[in-house]
Image 1 (cartoon, one colour):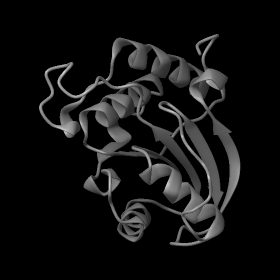
Image 2 (cartoon, rainbow, N blue to C red; image 1 turned 120 degrees about the vertical axis):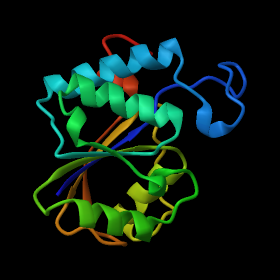
Image 3 (cartoon, rainbow, N blue to C red; image 1 turned 60 degrees about the horizontal axis):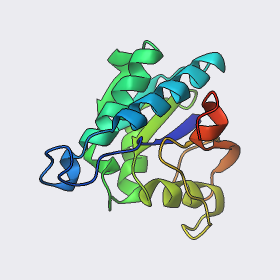
Image 4 (cartoon, one colour; image 1 turned 120 degrees about the horizontal axis):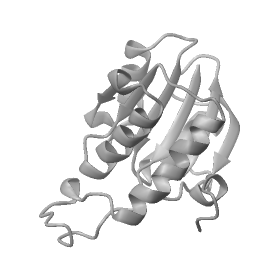
Length: 168
């Protein structure tokens, strides 16, 4: 399984975009622009996904929709509460295994610190490794059999500045 992880783009502060709760916060214009660069880089690398699984929070939803549209795989986009902040790794892993096959390429879109802790868990067996995904950051893992614990090899970890044409 090819498991990719993408943190949502830059979002407005609570209330700045009319949001009244954290789950309603939307991407800023800068966030959308940087994600367009990220999407272009993924296209350039020839990456596609059999499944895009995203948190339903507005900023993650918008991120996943932008990526799915750029890669022309909107019909493969699904949403899961198990990618919301504070979710349980084991439940998410069960859902991914239920929705996919061993040779699928999957993209998870969500939030920090959950995503970095998930990556750490899959790489080392614990969630204490110091990995931090920047907003719009991308990670690519090669997984033989997805399970809770050490089961992945890190193939790529990039901040948006590594993928964006001169953006910082």
